[in-house]
Amino acid sequence: MSFLVALAALVFLMFVAYRGFSVILFAPVAALGAVLLTDPGAVPAAFTGLFMDKMVGFAKLYFPVFLLGAVFGKVIELSGFSKSIVAAVIGLVGSQRAMLAIVLVCAVLTYGGVSLFVVVFAAYPFAAEMFRAGNIPKRLIPGTIALGAFSFTMDSLPFSPQIQNIIPTTYFKTTNGAAPILGTIGAIFILVFGLLYLEWRRRQAVAAGEGYGEGHSNEPPPVDTTELAPALVAFLPLIVVFAVNLLLGGFPGVFGGLIERAYGTSYDLTLALDHSIATPIASIKAIWAVEGALIAGILTVFAFAFPKLKKTFADGSKAAVGGALLAAMNTASEYGFGGVIAALPGFIVIKDALKSIPNPLVNEAITVTSLAGITGSASGGMSIALAAMAKDFVAMAEAAHIPPEVLHRVASMASGGMDTLPHNGAVITLLAVTGLTHQQSYRDIFAVTCLKTLAVFFVIAVYYVTGLV
Image 1 (cartoon, rainbow, N blue to C red):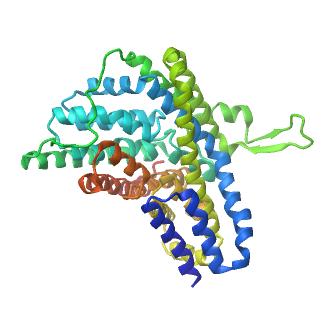
Image 2 (image 1 turned 120 degrees about the vertical axis):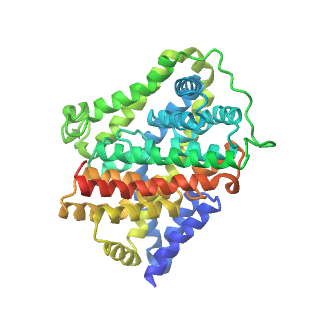
């Protein structure tokens, strides 16, 4: 019975997410409903002592990353730099290679720290224009954008500033450059097979005589590429984010980074307090590095585009802050949900069942990607899994002499596995922006989803065969 209660709470959360209801509202309902069926008297204490404690703890650590990432993406958009970056990449690759160009555009922007949602809005007008010119079916645009924005730059490539690559650092005391060789191999796997799949789909359409099509919704106007910022200036903030992130956080096995050199493993805050507050640097240095990098990137945009930003930043920043609050609170609510579910007697049954998978990396990958699929959120699913089972993963890995960096990379990549099921918020936004439906275009997004999931297990196999990290 206790197992069914925990399972029912997970299924309920998946159902409400799929139907589009607010996770912020229904995550506590699902968690406390499970507590009610287990021990009715424990509901108030579970809400305050578990759900809210976990939720606030997540926000304390990660909300600044959500906020700075949203603001950085917004100033890149308002300054016109995103349009310049897209035009420059397309000019370099060639407009005749529409799919490759759009994938690379999305990859450059996301790896540079621009949020996934901003990338969708920035890339779509160019994608529509190029696909129309190349007579490629419009229904293939969402899959193309998904490959570039929702996959290898989000969680596979080392030093990605996206939240999916940051969350594991606090559990495994790693940097966001963890397992750089494995991550790069996984990224190449996704990129190569993703492009091969998209090309196969394009050739199928050509053979069937299908073109771009007519009567589409949300068709963007022709892209105005006059008065674009110089490409070097537009790319500079992205380069600054990458460089500062690397400088502050360090490169695994080469140097520890400025944060570690300045603060060591712990820092005691005193000021005028009557007692010192110890800050464990090892578990948060990666978060500090990304925050510092995003601040540097924002300041760089302001330095080169202040005249434009002074007119639009007030309203634009309000929208960015609103989006960051919603995204952070969604994930924090799912994290609180995970903390409550992990405390239920029924979850012991689930943990024991997962422990029947003897390989720690396969165990971690299945757990994280399953919960990401249930919640429709990479960060949410990973947060639930790591909140409940990170200590178990670490213990199993230590017993098998597996470095924590490999745990980090597997967790990060697995979170971006089955997360893009039909109820995923980014998928719904992508289809809405492009004016297409699940029936028209989800097949190709799902193919990218399957490739991302396969890449996790490919990377695990590479590790066991080669020992590369």
